[in-house]
Image (cartoon, rainbow, N blue to C red; front, side, top):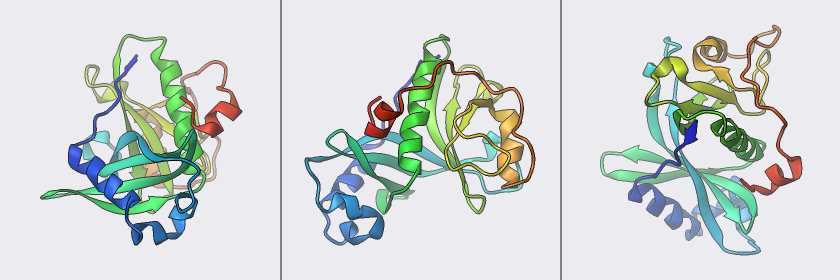
Length: 206
């Protein structure tokens, strides 16, 4: 699997840079770590955000709403910034903080590990499920079709779903679309081998 780093539209990057330079945007509670940086604040690891909130638990039903960037203060991931897509380009929406930051870094690291064992092209995206409090790193295969796509649930994951296990999307989607349930984790994860070093993951090193 060859991991193809996505290239965000110029308007998406401009919106994030403008937010990092805006006193109003930096007053958001989730931007607390950005108000006293130890170094330059840099947008990194842009991921297209797709939302699946309809009755169909199919990737074809997911709609792209914008982009999410991890914001680095030096080597540390301090927050994430999300921009939404409109008719005239992208506008800044909000900053986020919390466990999804390190979880996104860890999932990207796992995706790179998977990329070493296959020649299939893969595009990392974010797939969110509003109302179910679930987000997954979506490894989209443009050559193999939706049947070859993988999902890596981010932590915290809904009950019954093990975070940071890569699963075929067709198996995991019905579980994530239903939201938290009381059951055993689904079977047949794609094994990733030796986990990445937690200290490197927490630092945002990829």
